[in-house]
Image (cartoon, rainbow, N blue to C red; front, top):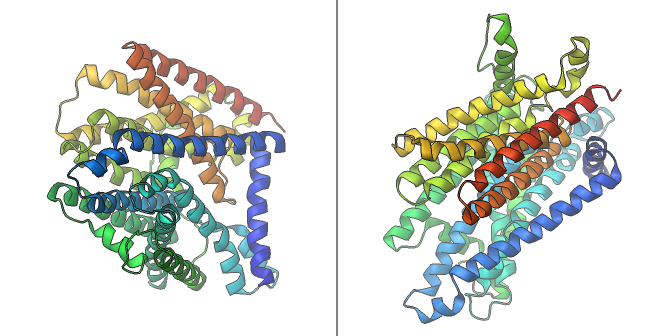
Length: 477
């Protein structure tokens, strides 16, 4: 047990040291952590306020709606969102670290090292899925009679669901490793299998809402609670905790049985043999984007998510404007890794006297290229001809979000030797993008066109901030 705890503790300590080093010291890291906690609390409070405003419990109780069916439908939506959080964690933090290999070299047992490596990963999955669903869980508890334990039960269901999604992906990875598949391709297949499960759950929930039937995710909730549903009873809460513990043990077991090593040789999806010298820098960035292991998985998941959003927007389930804003954030995801994947080669930039502005411009341009491709895919799925009045406002949103994502990757660059650092980079990017989109929407409500001007200013400020930060990193040593 001691080697397992030691590997887990060292893995967490490596992540903390990496963050302190990249953001500029312990005090700044503390400020970033405090800001993230405040943003998390604000998010849950906002979601709870939104739900109580548009779906007040008094109105629901006095209406002809079946409260039980409504709770089952909303709980199914929450279960799907918890599965989505698990997918994001799997994309951003594969859970493999060099600490485990070093521990095994130093005579630690394979089982202890594997479990110790997996503990921070499953903790991240549990904390992410649980903390992001506190607001909806508290609201749903107000709809359950005598719901003292309803909110903890809902949160436990969400955590167990996230662990179940991870278990499916890990089983797929285990089978693929036994078949001797390429590790990077195996990571892609495992994550896409989890995405497929979440997508099926979302589509089934939408179909169930239209047909006034109970969604399949509600059946999963009933299984976790011992076929009692979320009735705020001690038995339902205890059953959910037991199921979560079983799923947690299964995840640790499957991960411990795997023999695949961390991703080292990604698949060559794109190869460029020769291009004119003037555009070679752009082609090089494009190739590096699709060769990065996490970038490949992130891009594949983004494409699947855009397809689902396009289908939802086409059917009228999601407004087109909201879908386009989400697509912008998805398309900007590869930019979070742009500087991190080249940070170790910065001496080459210094040797060839490449300016920081050129580095940022090249890497940002590639990110905007992917944003353009995904945006075109979105319009194609909707089946609508892009109108200039619709494209221009969202083009500046794409630009601002892309610049924010790149700056987050420069402020806290991801490191392949510290996989969980990718999750921290993404959290910073998502927080910045969400605040910018919200502020721009509020300004547009005050005066049309004011939001677009705000996004242009944000994009320019983020670009200049990235240039300053990259210039400082280039000549730091």
